[in-house]
Each structure stands twice: as structure tokens, then as C-alpha cells.
Amino acid sequence: MAKFRQLHDLLRRRGFEDDAHWHEPLPVPRRWMELVHGRAYLEAFAQGQLDAAAQRRIGLPATVPLVRRTWLAVGGTLLTARLALRHGIACHLAGGTHHAFPDHGSGFCIVNDVAVAIRVLLSEGALARVLVVDLDVHQGDGTAWIFAGDRRVFTFSAHGATNFPARKQASDLDLPLPDGLEDDAYLAAVLERLPDLLDQIKPELVFYNAGVDPHRDDRLGRLSLSSEGLYRRDSLVVDACLRRAIPIATVLGGGYDDMEALVARHALVFQASAEAQRRR
Image 1 (cartoon, rainbow, N blue to C red):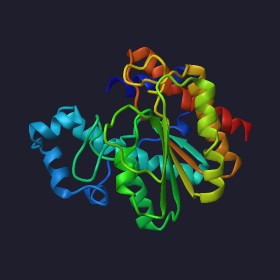
Image 2: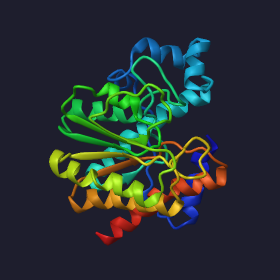
Image 3: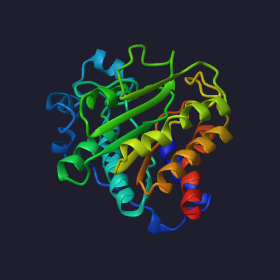
Image 4: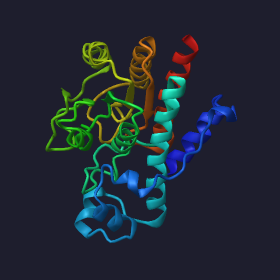
């Protein structure tokens, strides 16, 4: 959890000082959470009543600070989406908890923040067509399951073929990648599909999970991207959306390494987004 504060501080030091560009979310109300998640599950988590098996599946203890952060992080993802719709692009300093299913959490994910944000925006009539671009090294299985059969939401996941979760779900488009894949081959594989997806689907908003666990030094990654490769990936995704005037909201996703290196990698999507915005 310390990475979120350290990322904020690093971005401030790197030139993101203007307070006008920083926004603080509010926690989401439970009725919005219940557009995706069952009330019994949410109450059990919030009240510290999840059984031992459910907590092991998540991999995190249900503490009071974690409950508060979870509700606030989902509020941040929704605010990021609203800001992206207004300004063309916005980046969240958290989010991307894509392994959460309606009635259980998994893989360090308690609630599915992107799914909740999408359901809120759809219910408000703010959107009719959404594309989720998930480039975390682990498949966005919870997101794929939640939106299976929903023609308003297209899910694209490019992930390690042999990595977690062992049991994959069916995204609208899955791109399983072999262990050890390096920068050029990875970028070619993603770029072979993303521009056509944007042109065919014509989404009104893209949610981009910019997980940094494809990095070659990530403890749970198994792919072999460099930091430069991650920056190129983020730049290409953001630029592909902005060139088509498609708003894009980015979330952090996963990353597992020493704190200083991890925070520097998460900063890449902010730098790529700022540069792409300047070019526009």
C-alpha cells in the first residue's frame, strides 16, 4: 500500500506540481458497488467477516484501513473516467483490481473498480460503448466474467499464457503471450490488434489497465519487457486513443518488485500520457 503515496510524491518531484491537475475522489456509495458486487460479499468484507478461505483467495487481511482504501480507490476510478470524458485523458494513482468477481475477491483484488465505474456510467446514460484494454501480465478474468455477453462493453486482455489465473475466463479478445517475450515482439503483438479494435468498436471511452508486471524484473511477471518497452507500450496505447479522439482513463494494475523500482515503473504511464497530451 505504500506505493500509492510514494508514486504521488515521485510525480510531484518530476514536474506534476500544478494543483489544478490533481483531483481527490470520494468513496463510492454501496449502491454503486452493488451494480457489480453482491451485498452479502460487500458487507462481509467491510465488517471483517470474510472466512479464512476467502481472505486467502484475496491474499490480503480485511483491515479497517484496507476497507477505506478500497472504497476510495473505486471512487478514484470513477472520477478518472469522468475526467477523461471531460478532458480526453485522465490517470488514476490506483485501480486495476481486475481479478475481483461479483461474489468474491482474488489475487489481491477485493472489488472490481473498473467494472463498477463502467456500470455506474452505463446506468447514468453517460456511455453506450466501452473498451477495456488490459495489459497487466495477468488476465483480467474478473472483468471478462462480469461483462460476458454485455454488448456494450468489449474486453481485451493481453497477458502471460502460463501466468495467474490458472483458470482463464473468456474475454471478448484474449491475447495469450509466451514466457520471456521481449519489447519488440510484445509491442508488435499488441499493435497488430489495438488499432483495428479502436476503429471497429469506436468506443466512447477506453479503460486502460497499465500494469507494469510484464517487466523483466517483476517477481510475478514471466515476460521480459524493459522499462523503455513499458513506456513505449503506454505511449502507443494513449496515442492511438487520442489520435482518434477517444477518451482514455488509465489505472495502475499490478507490479511486484522492490518499492523504488516499482514506483518508477508505475510513473511511466503518467509521463507517457503527459507527453502524448503535449503532442496533441
